Amino acid sequence: MLPLYHGGSVVLNRAKGEAIKMPIPRSEYLSNVWKDGIFDGRVVFVTGGAGTICSAQTRAMVHLGANACIIGRNVEKTESVAADIATARKGAKVLGIGGCDVRDPESLKRAADRCVKELGAIDFVIAGAAGNFIAPIAGLSSNGFKTVMEIDVLGTYNTVKATIPYLIESAKRNPNPPGDGLTGGRIIYVSATFHYAGMPMQAHVAAAKSSVDSISASVALEYGPYGVTSNVIAPGGIEGTEGMDRLSSTKTDYRETAKHIPSGRWGTIRDIADATVYLFSDAGNYVNGNVLVVDGADWRNKGTGVGRDLSMQYPNYLLNWAETQKYVKTGRKEKPKL
Ligand code: HXC
Image (cartoon, rainbow, N blue to C red; front, side, top):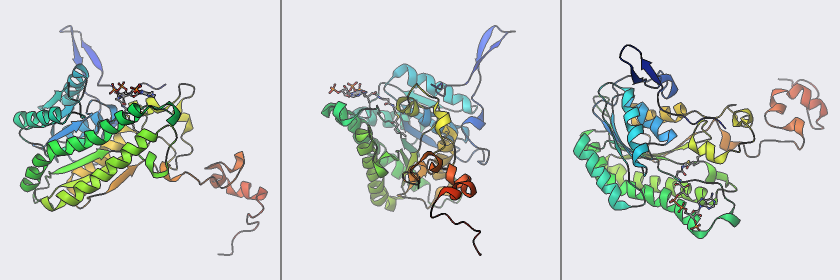
């Protein structure tokens, strides 16, 4: 099993005899194309912000100028990840609100109000809190199914309800397209691709994520006229994350099993952080009600193995077609005329 992404390393200052927390290098969570300051003075509110994917999204926003408020159930973890994210930029304010369960609308509303009181606004929202475990339908109780539906679907709905008044205010302050390049009034939901084709052992998660996509569409339609944009990011398998940890077996190293992914590798937290920055930035102004799949085309590769034996496994037959076609009855024997 791979280690999960963790906070920056700690080094010892021998002269002072004290430990110094080193920030995670930018290259791990943000590509080089984005300009510092594009989220200056803006505030991002993130549910599930202490998790591996959402903390990278938050870290990227903070690095580029935003302050942040992350929400989680575990008090200690949420506060320590908030402190770690704050190392991404000198002077950054990152509030960690633990003890907040997205299933409880009142506790979310209190968190959103506190964020605005302490940081001044909510300009961006990332609805990332989610629950997942592998279970066949036969091993999934009604309560197990309900629990994931409540965390993902009701939690997302509660997040929208608690933050939308602030997003509308932000959208008013930040007309789209912006004159100054600074944006606001945007929400992203972290979804999945499981529900496009269905996924065994994930009936609960697939049902939940398809509802999350649906909520995003409703928000785009109802609040687009108020200047708010609402989009989904659907990550594929992202290495080093809690999701992959939960969905993988300890028997093999999953990095060796990425051949079926057309882009040839698993995703990274940076891929998701970059997609987030794009949608929240001046570059994403006209993207609304959309689903941005960031998975190297993995979800599309459900039936592209055209053959029935090992030599016809994706992508081998594509890469060695000259050799493979010698053994395929319908394969072209000569070069095409054009
Ligand atoms: C079957 C299970 C189960 C399992 C729990 N349950 N785990 N059933 N197989 N492995 C059942 C319980 O038996 C119970 O039903 C019901 O679910 C509620 O369980 P609780 O433990 O009481 O719930 P709760 O404490 O609220 O915990 C929620 C949780 C837990 C989802 C079960 O795993 C959790 O807190 N997860 C949060 C973190 C997380 O999952 N992160 C992953 C995010 S990654 P009964 O019938 O016994 O009462 C992600 C990736 C998406 O979302 C895909 C990306 C590609």
